[in-house]
Image (cartoon, rainbow, N blue to C red; front, side):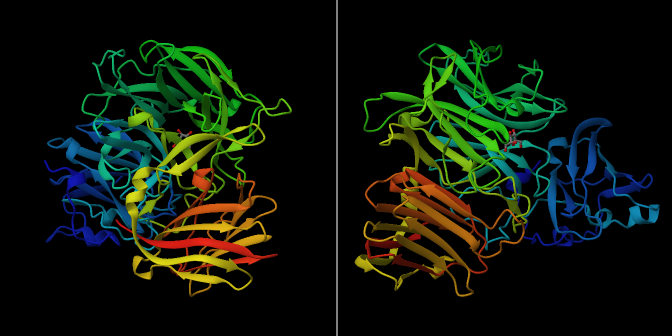
Length: 615
Ligand code: FRU
């Protein structure tokens, strides 16, 4: 039987009718039987690998019990189209080849008559197909060099690990619509962190619930009993409550077998997003679990990844406490240019409570003895709140396990829970950030901070330089650089400015229809801001128009910027990643110009370069 992920039809994704196999009429191979106002049976009578389901974004979810030979195989929730089809999603029948498949659909759509129930457009439009067309229909806003799902909804990156030259990225994925639901682990793989191959779904919901966030590790000594080098996933099973479960893979993470003894860890309150790693110093496994509503991280140890002993909790009353604590990560890094040796970094994603509203990643620097994390304090004896990225669209960031050359490589979800489901894209929501290397540096205040630089693989994206300006005095008259229009909203920009004799240095991205993004370096306050209030389409959420501000972590009035623009995203890396700002933008047409000027005195534009992107 052909696999859904390997078959593409040439039909367009704009309407269900476009998917009909030649000679078929809507509903061929599908028998629809209405059982009343809210209940309909859809019997699959034909033979095809794919059932196409029509979706209407504004519709309520229908609950679909998938019966295979009369037994409940799975339950999915789909916004089945009632009055119009916005887009379609595929249901993979190839898994049930040779068996009878019936969808038992329960829709609570407040219908007043059977006529109304029967008139829902989905019944005519549901049909069998040889495949599902995943051709990109959203070239306007789909990033071209960032990871995105082919279609459907994505949130947190999960379970990333590196093995045999391949970077594996799993992610919270809804294959049945562009809003959060049906959490599975989607899977992509890459040999260069830039070009991603879309793999089949790795873990699907089971009797214990949805497959929430978690981590993977390579069990080099086979401690869990699945053989040496088995890939072990720990994740949160989210049903009525949240529990931790285990799955193992002996084919390098392509397929996972869930452990029959799941859940392996239960608590009496909400805890999720299991992040585990082998601790060389103690010869034990460690697990960090977000005790979400208690706003603390729980630390466990285990000899075998199955039996876990709670050792301590960190964070009650510390750091930002407004929202829930989620998606932890804990790792050790050397501190650059200092005698501090190594420090431990505890990533703690929170929602809401981010510096500009909604979700964001805070972190703590400290020490970890295998049982207890102790955070560094500031001059006042307080544990300071630190942010990893000063934009609005950086969340659920965690690192790859088993990365080569002692690298600590991270990736984030490039959106914000405030509006992720409302952004003006349909085929996909959302993208990941660029992969980043994290490292530690010390500031004059004695504090250690976490920097994030673009991963070295990102350098290969740099194409021909299309604009180059050097050694210019900056005043109130802007100096303009033209962006590569043929590249359609995609480029890398580097700039070095000396602002010590100026009040502000202002960088403005603009297009011909008046959209602009204004980035201002305030020299005296050592801050950099990004204003996207007039960046293009901003009215889909009151939380989207925003100005984000970052400390620049310099004392000499000089900054070096590296700016990546990818149609609907801007990532600004300052001073080798000492400060980072990630923001989404939806310009009405691609930005075409970058202008630079100074206010409150003269600045110096030491260099400005605009590069094409090699894809
Ligand atoms: C964070 C999060 C996690 C959870 C997942 C569910 O964005 O809420 O805590 O595991 O998303 O999709």
